[in-house]
Length: 208
Image (tube, rainbow, N blue to C red; front, side, top):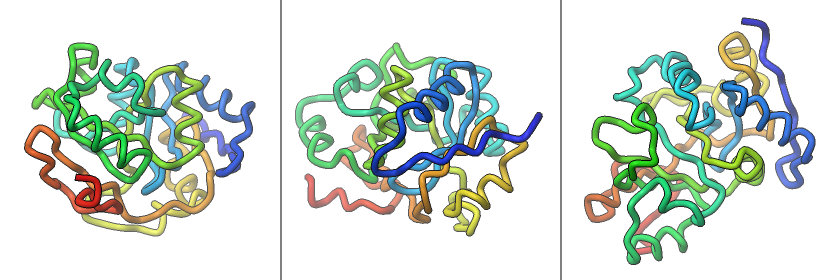
């Protein structure tokens, strides 16, 4: 595979032309690395099974074992992919956009290859303009997982140029939106009374 494209996008005022360029890569089955409000993410179109396989290969995990999240631009279409009751929706509306992954029961719209055996789905609405604009331009959620291993924080997970050096032969594009953070999102299991599965950048208690 040839070297990935290295696409610099302004974090506060993302250039529409570049957002379209990256969205086209996703539409064509590409895999990208892009900024979120926490760690840089590895992402693809949720409707492309081959691209999801590639994401899992790059991460070195089996599809039914990986923690994949759906990056959404807002909560408007969330009920297409996850079962959300009113109290849960109210909490999510307060907490998002923000550094949280909400684990919810998946609906039948979620492709089987995009959810774990548990039939749940992680929903993210990151507080990051590039990520949100990409999802809007694509027209459906981006399937995503953080580029780093759960147990290690490495320099390459925050510096876009180092990320590019490491992944340029594995992905189709690396989006440089400035330095990333090295703390992951807080994972909250809504199906189990808002249990925190992983402490991260957000404090869910203030929204409950």
